[in-house]
Image (cartoon, rainbow, N blue to C red; front, side):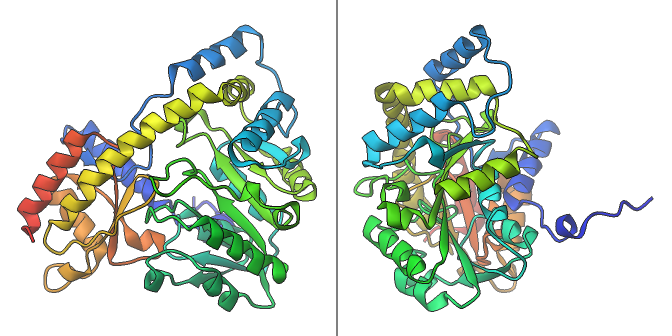
Length: 395
């Protein structure tokens, strides 16, 4: 029997990042000593005090349904946290819980986009962005940003807007490049969109992983007039090392939020009740929470400061210094020729010859580049660099 897959799903591409991670898991299960630099997942455990809050929620009997938008305590904690951290002026009615940042993005796009709408997506992009647009039968319009060092500008956005443009999707700090759009430029980007009635969906899952002198910046801090055009997709997954907990949220105007809650009422209903409780308590205990995040950020920065120069010491590798997230995005086009036709071939050679798993940049709209995650131990990073220098030589 051939299963009649729906056209929406049939048109989708599998997530290249998850495929690479699955490949690493399968190799490891077969006994291969794999160095996995593909996965975008913190190698830290969830802070113990957050685990304790989840246990406390269970002990209090928080095992039932919550409102689709989430526990009032959860939404109020987000309002208060953003007010204290960013000076945002939010209301509970602008917050909705979601089962991770990915569902938050889907909820936002599916409640806004109609067939034929145009969606602006800067390159390089997270692999899911175009798939969300395609699922909604919208048209992706990609913005090339290599000439500006992979940092989107308001001018690029303004020049890309057409009469059919409905949405811009942005991600800063960026996955896969690690580049950070300066706050003033972010505001100009939203202003350019608002002038044309274009909405902005901002993926802020790496919000707090910005290395000095860059600082965390959220579009939730903009004026109410500009925020009317913005949906912030937030996540606890990366920031608090809670990827498996599947908890995120949206911050958007009240009408957009109501639409997302309506959609979610027919899908996941709401995230796990005691997980919402744990997240609310963690945000209320902001000193401990920020201390835990800063400790992880400092370690990522330490790894970055060693890893990126080391990558640039490998023949044929060029890696700009990322200002945020935990990825090194490497230009390997100098290796193209008789041995390698594209970045996929380089990734395959790393896998077969050195048992190093990386993600091909083609999945991010950047053939010729490879994404290396340094959300792993320094030992693994040293081993990987030594193996790659053995393969390609040194500069």
